[in-house]
Amino acid sequence: MKTISNKKMNEIIIKNSRFICYLIPIEQDNVDDIINEIRYEHLKATHVCYAYIFDEVKHSSDDGEPSGTAGLPILNVLEKEELNYVLAVVVRYFGGIKLGAGGLVRAYTKSVTETLKNVTYVKLIPGYKISITFAYENEKDVLYIVGENSVLDKKYLENITYICYVDIDTLEKLSRYSPDVLEKCNIKELN
Image (tube, rainbow, N blue to C red):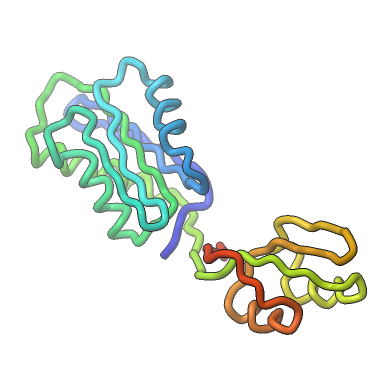
C-alpha cells in the first residue's frame, strides 16, 4: 500500500474537452471541503468527478456523467496503483463533442494515469500509535529507540509521556517501557 507525498495537477485535452486532474493526499476526513474548494475554483466546469480511498473507505462520484463512466474509472486507477489516503478529482469542461461511454471511461482513466506519472509515492507501513510513559532518566533511551520524527506529542509532568507512531519492531523494543497501544494506524516511509 502507498500514498502520494503532495498535491499534483495535470491537464489534458480530448476532443476539445478539458480534463483537469487533481491528486491530493488526504490524512483527515476533510474530503468534502477539498472537493467543494475545487468546485468553487471551477464554477463553469461541466462536471467535477472524483474518487477517493481513505483507509477502508472507497467512494466515487460521476457528477452527472453517465453512470460508471467517470467516478468508477478514477477509483479503478487508484485501486490498480494500490493507493490509499488519496483523493482524485477530475474537472471536465465540455468541448462540444460527445465522447460516448467508452470514450468517457478512457478519458477519465487517462487523466488520472497521466497525473500519476508526476507524483512521488510514499510507502505505507502498518504500525501503531502509542502512548508511552516513563521516568525522566529514561528519556534519552526512549527517544533513541523511537526517533524524534516519530514523536507527535510530549508531556512533562511527574513522568514523561510521548504519543508517537512506531512500527512493530520499535514496539517490541519499547515493550519494557510501556505495553499500552492506543490504536492501530499507519506509518509513512519514503521510498
